[in-house]
Length: 333
Ligand code: SF4
Ligand code: MG
Image 1: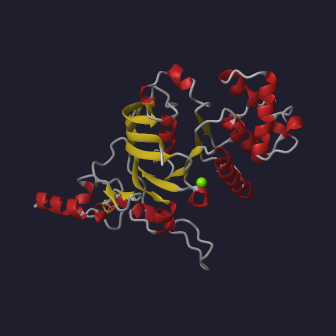
Image 2: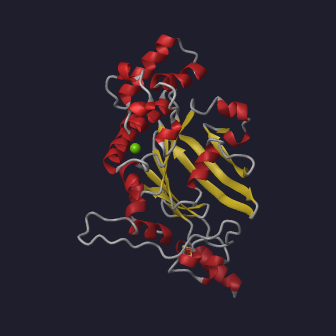
Image 3: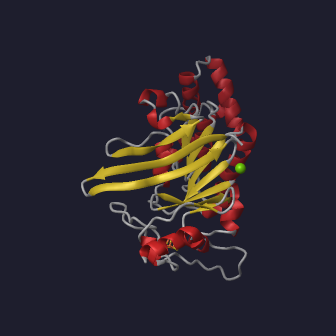
């Protein structure tokens, strides 16, 4: 499988009056062509900062990519000028955000907004742009597209608006789509429809998807692989099956326990005790130490190395690292 995206050792900081927040601290992951990778974690774990960094949408100042590379089809986006990024955003890489209303301009028709990107980047005629807009409305499941292109955002329901946002994101046929909590603002039945739409779009267009979410229900539906983030780091990566059925990091296990299970008679939510560490001065060791029921002496001293459990399953936890654990115990003695 070809890797369309490879993020290596990504670091992002934000300067504030209170100090520097180390929001993303050495993140590594890749995305294979045509797959959906879900990046999951609690709010503030750095997942949205990571996706904004890929789009180079970190406001500088106060934000800054201080280290790392973002290889998109082999080219390092971290080194691109803003001008070059503008020719990529919405064309090669598109992004969808949580709230469809803020993504749409209330004063312009849906048709104008759909065709804007095409006309700007693809130099197509008015007629071609309109045909493509109708095709996209069709793809995202909006009937009567020709008529509806003349309407304004407020004439559509929330779910329909999110479909339009998706159509706008896809109209230039990007290779990578980043969706940041794309269903969070929608009610449950609409959520399910939008998730089905993502699957249909991927099957139709082959687009590779990064899905940012805190919702493991969403992940269970459409992810192929999952990266779990905690305190600015990816602490476990695996296929959906590996993460849901063989999670190894205590944080991943905790996250899964805090999801309501419909198959259990007595559905019980067990939230993880405690809060994530302060990212002004993050711990040098495992950031989960203070909340981890298995924490050992070594855990808050040294950050656990990346242990490869299978070709697809990796975890950063001392419990998984026998060799390193022995070495360290010897060193401490
Ligand atoms: Fe828990 Fe230690 Fe593993 Fe961190 S490294 S998750 S503290 S056992
Ligand atoms: Mg898929």
